[in-house]
Image 1 (tube, rainbow, N blue to C red):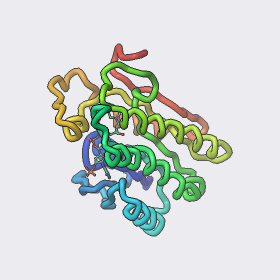
Image 2: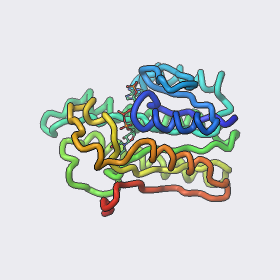
Image 3: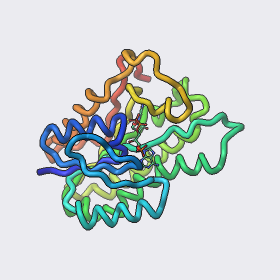
Image 4: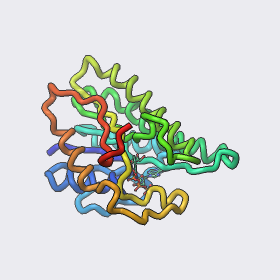
Amino acid sequence: MKTAIITGASDGLGKAIAKTLIDSGMKVINISRSKSDVEGIENITCDLSSEKDIEKTIKIIKEKYSNFDVLINNAAIVGYSKLSDLEYEKFEKTWKINTIAPLYLIAKLFDLIVKNEADVINIGTTHSQHAHPGVENQLAYCSTKYGLRGGSYNISNELKKTKSRLIHVYMGGFQSKMHEKDYGNVMTDPENWMKTTDLADIIKYLINLPKQIEISEITINRKGRRG
Ligand SMILES: NC(=O)c1ccc[n+]([C@@H]2O[C@H](COP(=O)([O-])OP(=O)(O)OC[C@H]3O[C@@H](n4cnc5c(N)ncnc54)[C@H](OP(=O)(O)O)[C@@H]3O)[C@@H](O)[C@H]2O)c1
């Protein structure tokens, strides 16, 4: 049975990916602060902004789940703030969760990734491709996701001579409560946004691509949002 480790599978996209992978016969381990209620999932409780929690999580993975086949770095927050109101602590926390945690997890699990011939998927955003309009007050989000993108390039290079692949996904907007939870912005037109179940099917497809194919970056967006 193939095993996937997913950060942030207690809600939103991560939860949909977890369910889709479990339904396809995979074992899934979630890493988040609250437990995921997806049937059959195993949970590691961890605040990804905490160094202590991350070190504990790495230890658990090495002891209990060292044979994983894919690591999906999905958890993130927006860290919304008007520029002039930006608080150091919130800015730093966004960097910790969105950039440091995923890159540190890859680094510390790197030897296992290579040994297992495991793949890594980093969930980024189209906001780290272009200066899209509509991202006012999201300096933390955009900059941290650019950081993740940069880290993906570096790690892809490190993986070049191995059997492992890293896919960086530039994700467009989808139905989720991420913005509502962060700064109260309720999605009033869900029908205009992508569905997490459709995105989860695409992630499943990417994971199962023949090993001689490498998709290093992919953009998944709402129709008409290119450029
Ligand atoms: N929503 C969009 O339209 C959109 C667009 C492009 C890209 N994305 C990206 O897609 C990914 C998933 O977003 P989403 O909308 O599904 O988000 P979401 O519904 O808010 O879910 C976020 C997940 O991350 C976890 N998380 C948050 N803070 C954490 C922390 N400190 N420690 C551990 N886990 C933490 C949450 O679990 P706990 O709260 O239980 O910790 C939750 O499971 C993110 O990388 C996001 O940047 C989203």
